[in-house]
Length: 367
Ligand SMILES: [Zn+2]
Picture 1 (spheres, rainbow, N blue to C red):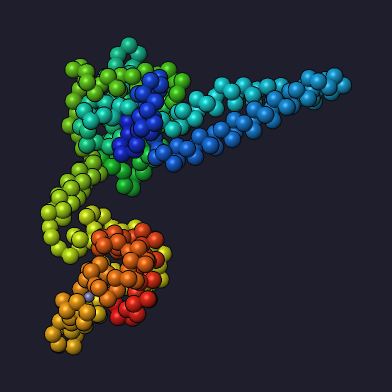
Picture 2: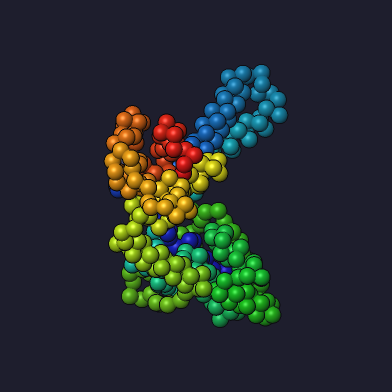
C-alpha cells in the first residue's frame, strides 16, 4: 500500500489568507479552496456546530455533575460518557476539519504543478506543466502508484485520494479522459494478475501521515532538480489551453477596436443574465447595439437619416442618452451617466434609470 498526495494545488481560487494579511500564520502555505463568501459560510457553519455542540454537551455533563441523585442512574452515566466523547470530537476535530475543508496545499504555483508518489523509503517527485489541471496531476500520481504496485507485485493496495473528481472520472467507463482510461487499463491488468486495488475517497487527509508526506514532496517537486519533468496534457487540458489562448487573443483585439459595441462593453464576456421581461430585454439590447426604430427607421421608410430637431445632428442612441439638449434635464434629474457604457450597463439601478428615462421622454415605444 502506498500513500498518495492530495490535490496538487489551486487554479483560479483566491488566496484569501494573503488578502487578509495573515502572512505570519503557519498555514500561509495553504491556499483557500473556495471564494471568500463560501469560506465565510463554511466558517459560520462550523462555528455553529462547535458552539451548539460545546454548550449542549457541557450542559449535560454539568447537570449530572451538580445533581448527585442523577448520578445513580446507569443511563445518565452512559449519556455523560457520550457527551464527553462528543465534546472531545468537537474540541479536537472540528477546528482542524474546518481548516482542512477550506484550504488546500500550494503545490501549484506559477512555476508548475508538483506531484509525488511515496513507496516505503523511495519517493518519486513529478513536475507537470503549469497548464495541467489539478485533476490531471492527481490522475498522474494515481497512475504512477499503479506502476509501483505492479512492479513490486503488491497483492492488496488501498489508494486514498481526496480528489473526488479524479476518482469519479476513473469510474466512468463511457467517457473517461486520457489518463483515467490509462488507469482503467492498468487496474484491469493488475486484477488479471490477482492484484487487488481499492480506491477510497477521503474528504481531507489532514493528519494522514503518508498523504501529508506526499504533500510535502509534491511542493518540493516544483523546484527540485530531482523531479521528473512530464510533459503531458489530456485532451481536456489542451482544450482549456486553446480556449484560454483564443479568448485572450479575442479580448486583446476587442480592446484595440473602435466600434459602437466597444463603447458599450470593454469585455468580450457575456453580460450577466437579467430577469427583465422580454420586451425590456429587447429594448435594452437595441439601445446597446445602437439600432432602434427611432435612429434607423429611415432605412425601412427609405428616407434620409433622422436629425435631432433640437440639436440638428444625426440622431443616434448616444446622442439621445448622453448629449441631447432636449432631454438633458430629464437625464440629469435621473442622474444618468454621460458615459454610454455606464448608462447602458447591466447594473440594475442603471437599467431602472434608463427605462424611467425612456418613459419620461416618451421614447419607450420608439426603440
Ligand atoms: Zn438632440
